[in-house]
Amino acid sequence: MELVFLDVKTVGDIPNLSLLEQYGNVTYYQTTRPEQTLERIKSADIVITNKVVLDQSIIEQADNLKLICVSATGTNNVDKAAAEKRGIPVKNAVDYSSQSVTQGTFAILFQLLVDVPYFDRYVQGGDYAKTDIFTHFGRGFWELAGKRFGIIGLGAIGRQVAKVADAFGAEVVYYSTSGQNTDQPYQRLELDEFLQTADVVSIHAPLNERTTDLINYNRLASMKKSAYLINVGRGGIVNEADLAKALDEELIAGAGIDVFTQEPINPKNPLLHVKNNQRLVLTPHVTWASIEARTLLMEKVSRNIDEFLRNRS
Image (cartoon, rainbow, N blue to C red):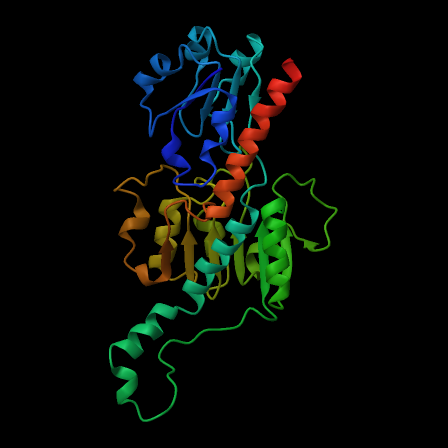
């Protein structure tokens, strides 16, 4: 078997990458540009891709192709209809990053809420040594206990975030973007009440026709001025220009964004030009990427290949 991993750089340095090599000869490419894709997979039996696009033309011309593995949850970079027409399965990986994203969600939230680096600078910069009291009230913060923690998208990740918020003593509520997720142990609210009453809004939903620009200027304006917005779901759910405007107008207390409409981020993205940037934390689509999550991801890719080969024999 000839295997090709088109963008191995997207999983980084993980200890079990060599799992793929039990299935045949593996060629690893750090990244692959669109014009390189066909040449690189034309002899491959199995292709692994994270973000590299496999469109109809490429799939039709890859004569030996038998399996496409997406080293991610989303499969929008693969023309599944073209693959199905040729009888080529498309296998993705799911539920490998719930713990990592949950941890990242609260890391971002606490950066906004408590701002430990501010207090660290206060001590290490010498100001604490000069004060006449034992503490410092220059940066106030509130507790999660007793506050309303709102979750958009109560899937595997959202439910894990809910458990942690509940452990902090928060009141967990959620909004279902499909309107069908009703069998949950938390209160489900309609969007207007959800946004108007939540102290934290944490987004863990997919990007689709129901969620694109879900959080726009008018909806940001309806939130509490003391509220925090976290988006670790998908770029495009929050309108970035509207959020930048809302932060500069101090409509909400702050926002933490890990995902963007264009990745890597466009230098002209309005969020890079927010005047009130102390109200904003930006991270490079990294909350999913703990070492454990990336290792589990590769295990799941390997399992998909193993299952495919066993079913063929």
